[in-house]
Image (cartoon, rainbow, N blue to C red; front, side, top):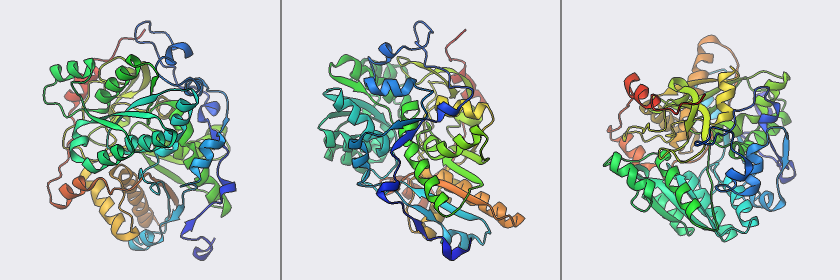
Length: 457
């Protein structure tokens, strides 16, 4: 297909938007291991999970056999405010790199939250409202999830309590203020407002926090307050399910022009964006219908895939949440305070962990100065200031395109541009001022954290 036949931006119509989420687990031969009760070491039941999560979300979490789950009209109508999102051909980047590769990116930053997180936030808020709840609690790292959830809760008239990782709370005040503008209360974590927060602060004085800490606090508040449930922006099966709209739209757009990607690349923190983007492509791979090279990109300072252990672990630092079998650095692992690129969760989605363990995808880690170098290059060429998280995928997409330049191969590359970086300017400032440094945890640091993994027979 000639260059002129593929537009810069491939848009779908509202009618072409997905009418159902795709449940990737239905096509997995080896299903993700179940969430485990930390006390009994037995699989969590729907009743047990229902004490923390919304009832219908529990059913989605446990369903690993239904391929497609219908998207309620209320959610689909909300999606129409910012979806379908464009699939963009990066012609300018291709030209600048002088690569024969064809590069496409799925842009998820065209909503006020600035990221893909709204796709699941509105779904989870909808089910909370449907259940008659008063509000929800959550954690947020860089702030995209907290921002998205505050928007969704404002739409449905729900109270929203957000525990924001302390280092991000301090570095990203404007994202915090967007949450407050939408009516959410935002607390830096770990805090003195919860028992688990006090315990973490006593054990780690002066800590800058982690997602694991914030999760512990949010769960405690949800469990102790009637009419509240906890919601999570990544990692869980239900979140990957909601985010499948990204991949479904991307594949529909590619199919319209007869385009089959060779490489699909996504940044990887807890797994929401990556799982959503790769879902239909991985489904074809699992069913033997097509093959793709799928690459997960994570930060070298928090390398759960590439240096973690595949084992049951707590999803939170306070060790009050269910155990998940995943690639993990240990729930006590806290990324270095100099880490500004997001993707700071110590573990990875059980679904993606199983797929990686079974060899269906690969993973690589990149250092943050290299990530911001790619972000700056992309911004200058393609005109979008990317989120630091997204820039991990940009880094590897550029690297793969340059390999094509060396070999002369005309590969088609698709990557996820998960959001914009306009609330991440403190990090950009550090990079521009030459104050950004790389930190790679030592084997000893990781080993010390992994040594604390719970013992599961």
